[in-house]
Image 1 (tube, helix red, strand yellow):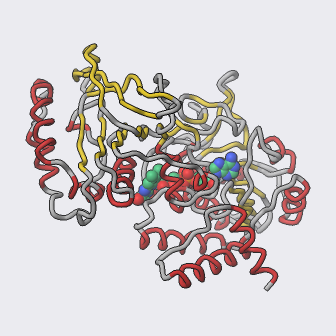
Image 2 (tube, helix red, strand yellow):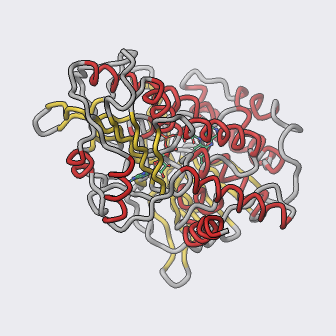
Length: 448
Ligand SMILES: Cc1cc2nc3c(=O)[nH]c(=O)nc-3n(C[C@H](O)[C@H](O)[C@H](O)COP(=O)(O)OP(=O)(O)OC[C@H]3O[C@@H](n4cnc5c(N)ncnc54)[C@H](O)[C@@H]3O)c2cc1C
């Protein structure tokens, strides 16, 4: 059933792709949506994760997001972080009278392995680096100390993006991509090889395949297959504009980072692994043999976990989802469950990377947002009383709490200010690095 406009009000927390497409779906059903977002700008990782030179993709997404925000019943409040340690909590959103709350804040927590040395200067999580080069405050202000020899832990698409940055922007001497498993388990998409293929040390790659070939063969894997995969990308990647040597290291698990707080990282100690098949799954088995790679920077690209400061119960890397959803969509649960009572928390929904951390591209997050909104509609249509939380009420409460909420028309002013800076500097894109600069640009536009 499509609601009478203004019949129900729903709070959506997080305006990345999942939150934005959930909001659009709710708007299409006549629901009033208050869309709260930590960052001033909407888009989440589509704005601040996708590699900066994928301009066409980013601009296409920005145009879609702008169109979504123009949907009549969506009210955007950027620069508003919600959480237990924030002026605005989830509990308060309930008290304000929203009929339902949708959590789409992505996976803002960081996964670490808990190794000795992780606190040393020169050790980063991928998110720190990615947010830094994508100009997201306050990460944009964080000093990132990249040395000459960098180890990236993980071999997925984020590793490929980091390699892009390290090879073509930072032009470091060496990049090592470290995998616990083997060449057959490399997780990046074919296209992502463009980032590093021109700098891949081919001789080293062949030697590395030869080293791990006996384990692959014992598992029934073809050691030639990864070489063919790599060969198919040669000649088609980004032009070689640095002397960086890019190398893979397979079947190795990091166990310790050597160095000191004064000198930073000096080496990464790795344990050699073998691989075994366990119920059709390739499992890692440490061999108790260790070696140290001389590097001065270590970046963990091993996925993210949700932010446990939001005030929602967690289960592993994600918020605790109900295993007995009342409103499943496509056999998927979007409802939050209290693990201590195993009761679903009525009216509380979760979507996108908050539901399934670090999983999938924008299209997947979009589908998840849409399906999450469908679950919300089932809930609302199940007899939930009308609610009206007006934009005036939200705005005044936010101001009382000390926020400076950024609404749609202010975003437009910011876009114009950044476009005019880009034009002035003769660059394809310009982003202010701090919230203060963004707020000042918005203020100037309002005063003009
Ligand atoms: C390095 C990297 C590169 C990628 N490259 C690509 C690519 O090339 N192509 C592609 O299709 N996909 C890419 N992806 C994946 C894609 O970005 C994600 O699938 C998608 O952005 C996930 O959407 P989401 O809405 O669930 O979360 P996010 O995009 O993380 O959005 C979360 C939103 O919630 C807000 N938020 C966070 N905490 C709070 C809070 N406490 N209160 C209020 N708001 C909050 C944030 O400001 C943000 O706007 C990439 C991902 C990464 C990490």
